[in-house]
Length: 474
Image 1 (cartoon, rainbow, N blue to C red):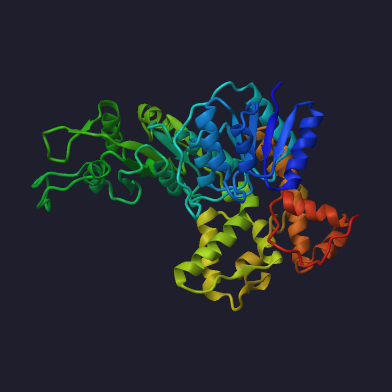
Image 2: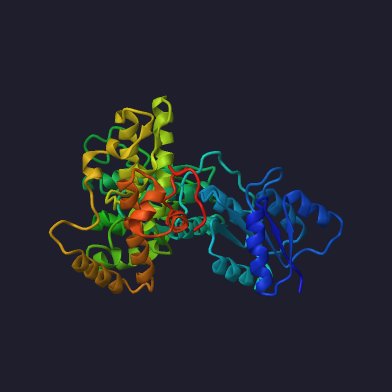
């Protein structure tokens, strides 16, 4: 059996993977840089069974290594690792022909399962390399967001119709733009229209355009959104609110590939990729007779479900810091920073308005917080006073209700979700109580100092340096 190659400048990562592979009796070789691995190939050394590489290293990057390896050995499975869990990295990895993308920190058992899958893989389709932007367009380390990143990467070579579902404020248009940006149509227009925001008597003209004199006030011919998006992507936001008569016209375009301007008699060929989005349950609206079933099936070719922010609480610190930086850049001021206590408290909140609400809060803090460090006391009063369990309700009863709700979903992850939520609340409240001092928070909770540090990392609550100097071993 040929060895698995590990390429990472981080010695501790190499050590963990080496020990895991040795335990599984899988041969391996380790390299501290991409150039070391490439030099071995230049010497004629037999290529590995699987290549596992970090994405950002001194010298040549993991993507450079991926590109060169794939040029020589197209069927070699390559797993890309990164601590920078952003969309551009994921898409670039998949477009470069990676077998899989693995964010750090990773679970050792899951990493081993992925390596075993890669060993069984005989070939993988090669895609085109992608340019990595300096600023990621979507951030997220949560598993649910990594699935979204993977889906966008796999869609990069497809023109399939996409349906994006998710709560209001969760970033559906941002994902739609990302799908377009990383698609074969990226050099053509991306046109967005919110079908719920336009009066129904104007929506037809907005979508399909109109001829001069088609109705009162139509003094000139007007191109609709379909024509504006020719060759590119048309994003139909809040598609669930589209009036029935427009649903019929849209279905005809999707079926026949032609449409007419309002008042027009000549068919116009549509060469447009459709991405639709909704916060509603379209299956329910179909059953209620509010949405055409045939249109639903036409739109629901590839579905991307965007998680709510409360489902990806570990991403709140990353997003909050990013939005503070973005707001400072937009306003031309020095960026502020969160204290551990403030960031931990934010990570414990539900954010019913999702990512949009968090971004607005960070913009408010950039303008209103008095100092350069945003402390717990600087947060808006309604956030400081927020609690996970409503007053007047016994917390065990509230827990029982939440268990019932999750069990009804039947996703098999009830224990993990509730355990993570429980530990997150315990630790964030203890940190808020001690002003972010981890050792004091650990003592207050009755757990070890190393335990609280590990839990903070696992739950994505680490906001930088701890207020404690050193963590002595337990």
